[in-house]
Image (cartoon, rainbow, N blue to C red; front, side, top):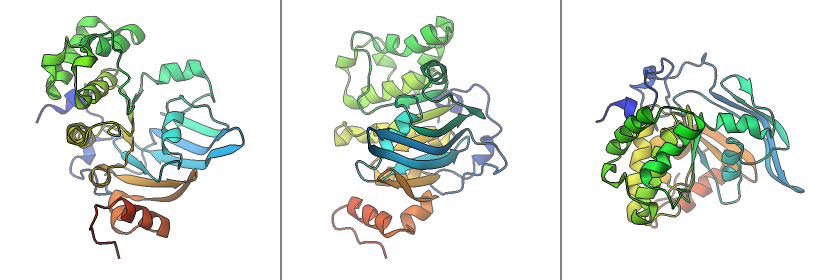
Length: 287
């Protein structure tokens, strides 16, 4: 296994997360001290499009090293919520607190700064087609963070080697498969040294055989204690990676449990029905 400092870009181990080593992910035991302040807090968040309420009084915390998985049917507000957490959607009420500091509501200048600490990967890759892989990765760290190119290139080489894509450094996005593009998009986000990573249905547009390589990369990030919020419909992956699952419907958190408890003992009929609907054909329904 490669050094954890490669895929988790922080140079020094975080004392708040190193104690989680023996717990693993998907067990529901994050081994993070409850006394530690959350990395992210969301309080009474409200989001509307006109008169349509998409998020209704949503509140939760995410601690360092934790993996939070958002599940729910289409239209439940999952993707809207995760976009609010990166300032890509305006909010109509509530508060987002990152590292103990409240983010000024709908303040684009504040969010531009925070996006260097909160990375996000979309299902559509969003690589610049006219730039090589290397230039796509270098752009944010050198232009936004003003870091020396030599430092960025050294980090980029480590990251590309760790995801086995070093040979594509000078390739253009059109020369890559969908899975390769998505892994490059993740590397690009990691090159900014984020403290929180957001993943919005990153495998939704991939061919089935390409899904595995992306999910395996995300699992490795989780095992290395990258703080992550993940929207996915990949249930087996969610079971393996989640410390906590939040189940949403119609903009409301219906259920919040440890990953293990949610998948083995869902508390609500709606969550139980959802899990049954997502089970492989022929699978036995839960008791």
